[in-house]
Image 1 (cartoon, rainbow, N blue to C red):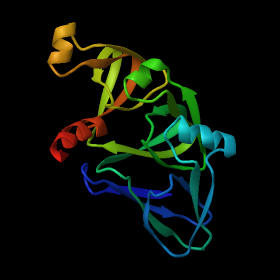
Image 2 (tube, one colour):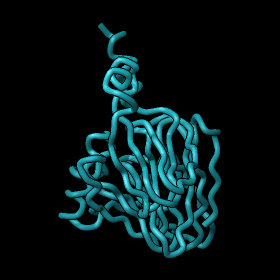
Image 3 (cartoon, one colour):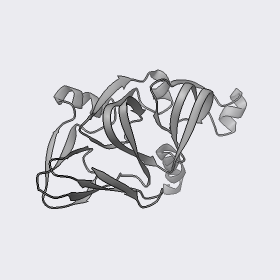
Image 4 (tube, rainbow, N blue to C red):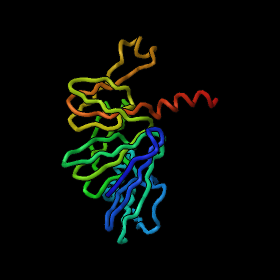
Length: 220
């Protein structure tokens, strides 16, 4: 399966070429165009009950889309995300990665999508009560609003709430004030997330909550 991410960091999209009999698993409403000969089917996201959990607890869709190339030649499909921002591809080789709700876009068949408890800290930090965990062997495409920045953590690091996109399972999240009580709330930072451990964390430069906070006062 060949793929190429285009459009720059502001408006990324993915061109994927499915070889004969290859299957791509994607979130609904991520396909922007495809060859007419590609077969599209929909199914529950991990079964009916798991699909319900991922929808209401993990922020994902109840259904999942399956794109299969049943022809004898390569066929192309283009995927995008609902918000303007960067899309990336990570290749799993028996390892796993955790995503914030809404970050997952698509994966190859060798990858499994699971749901795990993230904790109250994650919920208060506006990252959701549950986290999505992808594992296995294959490619995963994910994205978020804004550009994506890699942070290699070895110890502790501070990240603003609602800016964490993905992280390795060994990373732990804790919530704290940005500074003292007065500085935290009157300085505009409030609560922040302290990440602890060793591994990679992917951070988005923008957040939807920040965008809505900027837009809402201008609507009245």
